[in-house]
Image (tube, rainbow, N blue to C red; front, top):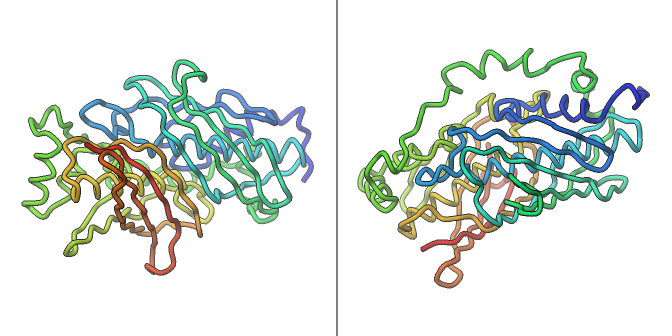
Length: 335
C-alpha cells in the first residue's frame, strides 16, 4: 500500500510504532521528533526503574531499552521515507557503552539515526543524554534485520497507520492486574544495611530473591533467581508488560538486555562479595531468535580482569538450554 508522506508525518509514525510496543507504553516513552535520518525519544524518570537504590540512578537496562527503541524507530522512519513501505525490523545486535550514570529525577533522551541501509540489514547509532547531547550518558550501535512489509502482518500495519491500538485491544487489562503491579521496593538507605550485608543475609538464607527485592527495576520486570549448588539461574517470567511486538507476541529486546545485565550484576555481588553495586561499563548483546511470551532464563560466567574490572558472559534461553535466544558480554567496575 502506497502512502503519501505529506499526510503521514514521520513523528506520527514513530509515535505509533513505539506506542504499539507494550514495554514502551509501560515506560511512558514519548517521541518528540522524527525524520528520515533521526528520532528523538524521551524517557521520564520513575522510581520503579531504579537499578542503584543507594543513589536513585535508573538501571542500565532501561537506558538500553530506550536506545534500542530509538534505533528501531529510526529504521522504521528511514525505510518509510526511502521506500514508502511500512516495515518493522528486529534487532540483530546492540552494543552499549555507558559513560556516566544518569542523574536521578530527570528525564533521559535517546537520539538515534539510521546511517546505512542494505537490502537486508539497517545500521544504527544512538546517544542517551539528559541536559546536553554533548555530554552523553551512553552511546550505542546496533544492526537490525529488514523483513518484508508483508511479514509484519495486517494488524501491525493498521496500527502503524493509526487504525488500531493493539496494546489496548490485547493487553490494557493485564498491564494493571496483580502480576504487573509494581510493589515499592525498599532502598538500601532505608534498610540500614550495606550491599555486603544484604548479600551476606541472602547467602545465609539461601534466598537471593531477598537481594532482588532491593532493586526496583528487578521488580518492575518481575525477575527472580534460584541457586543450584554453585550456580545461579535467573528467571524472567512471562509478563505482558515486558512485551515489545504484540503480534507474535515477543519480549522487548531491551527487557531481555536489562534482565541479562541485572543477572550479571547479581552474579558479581554474590560470588565476588562486592561492597557496592557493580557499575556497568559496556554491554554487548546478540539476539539469536525471538523471545516469546514465556518464562525466560539466564546464567552467567565471570572472568576477572585485573583488580577493578570483571568480564561477564551471559546466556539466555527459554524452553531449551541449548537453543539460546540471546547471548551477551559485559564489563563491570567492581571494588
